[in-house]
Amino acid sequence: MRNVVAALVCVAFASPLYAQSGTQAPPPARTLSLAGPRVGMTFLSDGVVDKLHERNVDVGQNISQFGWQFERQFYSKQGGVTALNEWVFLLGGLDQNVAIPSLSWMVGLRTREGAEFGVGPNVTPAGVALALAAGVTMRAGVLNVPMNFAVVPTKAGTRVTMLTGFTLRR
Image (cartoon, rainbow, N blue to C red; front, side, top):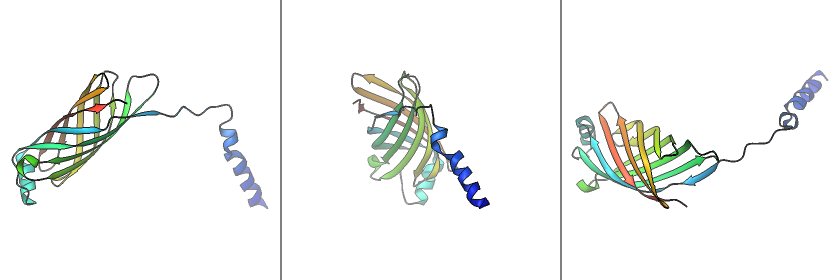
């Protein structure tokens, strides 16, 4: 009997009816998709080139990058700083007859003026590392033109990437 009373007391105090009385849930976050193509260049340190050579990938220190960025921007009515969630898939080295895949997941912030900063994991055949990125998105009507700069420091060396592309604001 004592266990039944204790269970009923717990259920009564845990009831969401009492916890949420008189309050409203915040409005859902609005999102904006800024996905689009990306093109750029990556500069590889000697150590990264050597690491790729160990995996039978022979490239120079500068490789082309082509890919797609899946970006979702979360914002509120007040404007100002917004949160970003980005997945960036790139194929590098196509100019040197190789395809080096790269996948990054970035979480960051963008200001009202278009400046953005992000951080997240990066996976390539050269290894796994933490990517740090910054950039700016310029707007012209419904066209967004992002210009991004990313640095990926690793044990083997550093990779520096510059990307640009475009997205259409819907």
